[in-house]
Amino acid sequence: MASHAGRSHRGVGRLRRRRRPRAGGEPEAAGHPFHLTSACDATSIGELLALACDKLDIKAPPLIAPALYLRVLVPLLGRLQPRRRTFLRAAATYVPYFAVRAQFDDTRARAALGP
Image (cartoon, rainbow, N blue to C red; front, top):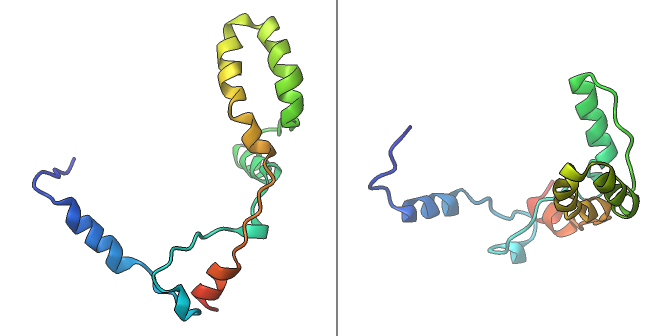
């Protein structure tokens, strides 16, 4: 394991600033942050699941709507398997994330990056 003793964090920050790409397409974009996103080309959860199952050579489990999982399966499984109740409740916190249908506009980033 490499030792980091005696190294300054300032040097790391300077290195990052030098490596930051320059905006090429829009002069007014200079100095402004851009978020890179796949926008409308984003991979769906179903596509990710299919890729993983193909790679692992397993059958894909059924996809369940997040609302159905939260309203029906978590309470039912919690009653049938009391030892898993804590896990089910904790995992339910993250389920709404899968129901988000967010889309991101990458027009400015694509224009700034150029062809």
